[in-house]
Image 1 (spheres, helix red, strand yellow):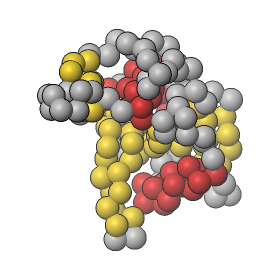
Image 2 (cartoon, helix red, strand yellow):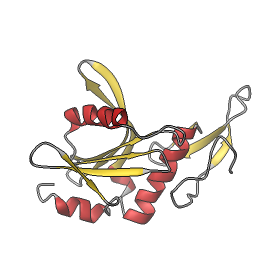
Image 3 (tube, helix red, strand yellow):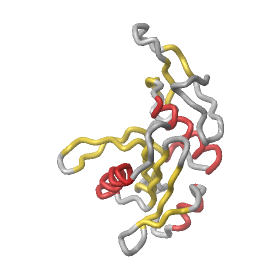
Image 4 (cartoon, one colour):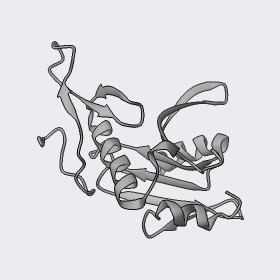
Length: 164
């Protein structure tokens, strides 16, 4: 399924289950979110999320059982939602992933958003993707972040942080 609303991404193809939206007035599609085990509206951002999650599992060895989509958190008394959180086997946050539609540029504002989420979760890794450009960074001991060349495999990500 490709059209101008859901463009080709800079990610491997994903075997997504799609169906017409149950609300026939919308005329859109839904996709089965394997992590939430429910059908959700197939928006451009969801298109990116589903492909990126499939990439993490198939190409980088991230276990589905340690990943969650749309995780609620409280930030300064305000309810927020993280797009995806990846946990260690001890169920500590390992990585937060933030998605944007392909037509939304990944800017400092996007990194500021994910950094605010991380002030609550304290994950050692952050990833931002709009499906075309992907950025992964690792928290450093001096309180900053170091950008990595690529998204590490799950085992390497856990191995880089022995306290996980």
